[in-house]
Image 1 (cartoon, helix red, strand yellow):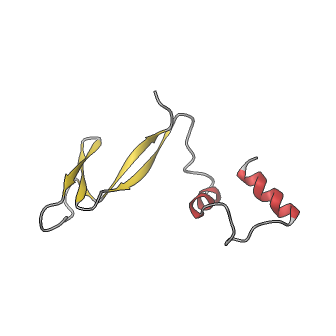
Image 2: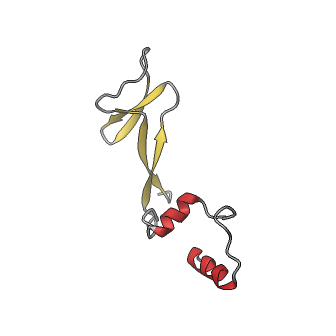
Image 3: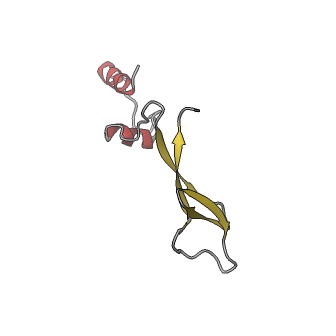
Length: 94
């Protein structure tokens, strides 16, 4: 049963859950209301943003990223450097 079917079935039966007792995550609900723009195509890829571990930052290297240790005084934004990096997620092994 799809998410829409389940929600509509519970509405029709009068057994809808309150937002507080919802079993759907806030992110999943927002994604549904937006028309599922984050939906993966079969075998396609979406991306996931990953924060660098404490004391490190990401450096863009061509199409990929490298993890670099922050300098002694701490990280300062610079060209190619970032505390977050976006990686593609591959759904199916090839």
